[in-house]
Image: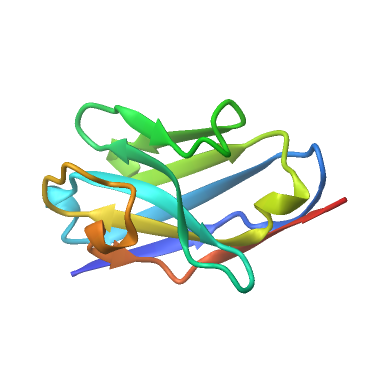
Amino acid sequence: QVQLVESGGGLVQAGGSLTLSCAASGRTFSTYAMGWFRQAPGKEREFVAVIRWISGNSLYADSVKGRFTISRDSAKNTVYLQMNGLKPEDTAVYYCALASTRRTVLTETNRMDYWGKGTLVTVSS
């Protein structure tokens, strides 16, 4: 089993920045990728960004490309999401996710094996 704990959410004004962190513990030796998804009120959970653990290759949703940056610290089993230029439409609960085996597709919720409980990001206009 793997446990994921997110931190770093909060309230920020439009145009501001936040950095989310997600620490993984447990059986993390087989991590293939870690990523971030988000869910706004009344909407489905959607893909934000993902990073392959060994290669460091990353992928972003079009809505955050150029504003968000995903990174990882392998020694700490931690993934980060640096969010700049935040917009009110970025308001959501942000969830950390982990894929423990190789996947061709990493942008769909059913491709991830473990989830954190989420951290709320609120962007005021």
